[in-house]
Length: 106
Image (cartoon, rainbow, N blue to C red; front, top):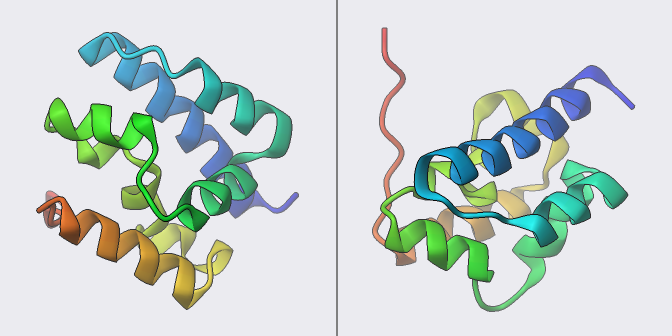
């Protein structure tokens, strides 16, 4: 496993931990998917569905789409892990729910 993929896996676990700590959302199934298949495979699986996951909608209702897999797929540091189609699907889903990434803080 390459370093970028390891960092993405860690980011997926951090999504889980942050959502649990900050909004009380315990995404056990998501964590299990990441643990069993790795973050990239889990992300691609979630992107392949026609409708957003329950986790996505839970994060949306808490105004935390920054914690979604979709938001992380679009981060420049993970670009090499996903196809243009994966990123377009992530972008479209986030757009559909009215989320635009904030520019990085300087």
